[in-house]
View 1: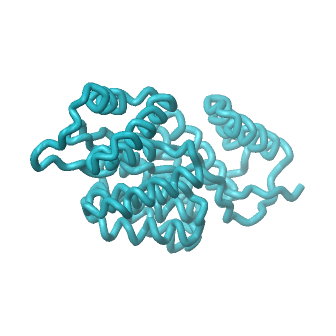
View 2 (view 1 turned 180 degrees about the vertical axis):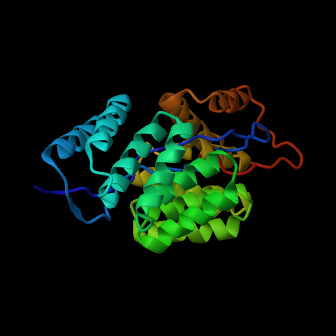
Length: 284
């Protein structure tokens, strides 16, 4: 039978260590969250397709262990001669492994997918994320750049490359990538949030607040936007607005930094400290 195997861009939000001084805000949100499909249709057996379909259903419902198991079975039953199909399944299993934080196992799956089908953009994004987590920023940027070359509409590759540039403190370069992510997908809230962290690092605070606000408008669940905006309101002595955002950050994830800053405001220590900086943005 003829069955489509569009390669999915897996969801994977990886947090970074945040700076705890000067009410620094969080690292950029780096995701492979949405499904971006670019693969052609392939001819696969009904048995292989059934395991791939079941794996995709498990993945969508957050049952990543089951997804890994189903994709593994699909790989064992798929003819190795069909390289593109094998690559697509490896990329899917890599995605599930990334959700499970099993980077040691995800990395060879990304490599296998790339070796089998060098024109498939998703595994470069996946491997780029692993490189970034390992601190290999130049390798991550190289892979994200390849993903963008293969799919110029891969907005998450733009976003994640921007995150890597943020880590290299190349904030203006990062902003260009976040601009491109927004150009391709204006509803992608993480790109606004991440661009805000770059503007905050450049001390362009009004632009940062505007981006955090837009990120929240696009998706109120976006990670770190409320806390980041609160730190700027605090720095600008707009304490009422800071408290509203801190309350929201605490309600969402019990952010310990949000508790600490809220306590500082509530206790009445509202005088700005000499030469105090609001720090850089916490996006990831």
